[in-house]
Image (cartoon, rainbow, N blue to C red; front, side, top):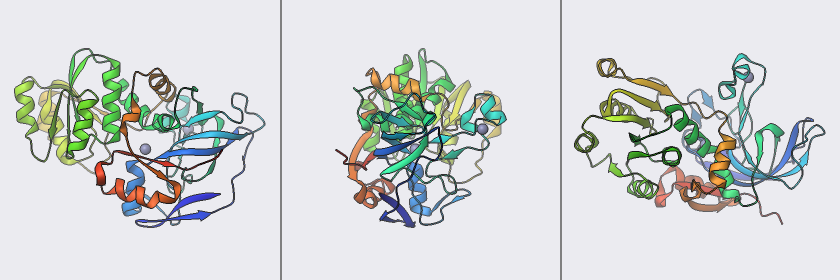
Length: 348
Ligand SMILES: [Zn+2]
Ligand SMILES: [Zn+2]
């Protein structure tokens, strides 16, 4: 089968490798249909690492994927060949205290698709996964929609951590795919007024189309001044989806006393700082988001019933052999790219 390997920083090679086989009775062999290019893949592409997770080349990245079941292990009961599935890229151990507490996303022994030293990623024609990670999708759902279930589940989980909106004033700082998924989830969950910021105008335009009432380009507009006029008492919830010191500072500035800051973005640096005086005086609540938990199924339902148009995020399409081009366009924010889809298979 063919797979796209990172062979160095900003280097992709399509190589032929042996097809995988279902390893255990609870595994399934998947034919990958579509893979979404994620910001975390771009970290590995641009720098070969995320924090302590360092790529040993060659390595296959990719974790947002939709697939068709080819073969199932002997103990798999609820999947059969031909089923179309959305894939949850996290494999928990099922044994540790976190798994026992229903927190599989913080499993102490988890492995995740495409993470160095854990599992090779999904930019390959075939992949073996535990059946428990494969969620059948309805016939009406496209493979692109199914591919976007992974990032949308993170948006949905983030919304659930904040709560069900009922008239809240909300800021989303950073309108990359995850910020936009938070926007989609929050607008679907209940009435609220959303202010969105980014550095790229095309993303702000998309945020406005997806329900943001007001948008600001952080490189031009003074967000605090503008929001101060529109919402003098301050924001109820701020979702920091950029992973920058500046946006974290801005979040603290924008929140009303008693407001909640949700930290969704992943900062480049391990240490960031807060103005403790502000945090304490406003008595802000800080919530960290680590991927998602138990949100894949409800994400599928929200997309399937048409309440959430997650496919609006897709701006670009590529084949597996064009992976390098896809990565260049996404890594450099070229050509208005938001979410690029790599169509891996052209199976009959
Ligand atoms: Zn992702
Ligand atoms: Zn565990």
